[in-house]
Picture (cartoon, rainbow, N blue to C red):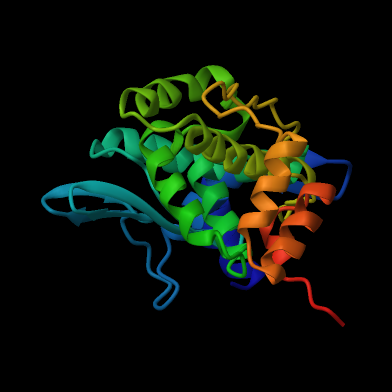
Amino acid sequence: MDRNRFNSEVRPRLTEIRIGRQRVAFDRLELDNGWTSISPATGVPVNRKETVYGTQANAGLVKRGGTWYVDKRISGRRVCQSTGTSQLAEDERFLAHLIEQDRQAQVYGVRPSRTFEQAAARFLLENQHKRSLGKDVILLKQLMPWIGQAPLDRLHMGTLQPWIEHRRWEGAAVGTINHGLKVTRRILNLAAGEWMDDYGLTWLAAAPKVKLLPDTNKRPPYPLSWDEQDRLLKELPGHLAQMALFTVNTGCRDGEICNLRWE
């Protein structure tokens, strides 16, 4: 849009903020509203409201299966995410909140709020090479109904406790629950330490401390006596006896032992 057209069609609807003698600033929300009220193709003013299923919806909101979704370009970036509700008024406030968050981040360096679901999606995309990715996906799917829409900066052991109690009620082993906590802790640490957004800010100011549950159901180790070791080695073939002797004297795990080669 050229300057003359901007001054005649959009600028009258904006609030000017003088900066020094020559510079002028405009409110980001008003600027977005002023632009979307002009048709880019014809230059003719249009109504920002569009009818969806008999209701009036702001441009940038799409209804799918009874739930509203945001699908809008904000500051040149396409934002696509669920609002998590079917109430149009609440969805419009959600969209306005996203636009305001973007303005706060650009102007004042305020970190935008992101959900655990967004962080989990990025984690899975960046770890396609992991052999245990399938297990991580299953654990994250179990977590989504409990903390998926929770902002990252509000996650801590207290918000994870309902999920922990539910998994215990389902009879999940402590080790399985701890694996879910480990994945959650890893995502939060990445959000606080490595993931940077377009504004040069990390996704999370500081990662909360996520403690693992004490696993008291593990069978304690049983050391062999000298007599039991001798009896065990006598019962094994020669090649396995050598392997067993190496194992009891080093304490190596079976994976390391079985991958050894004579050369």
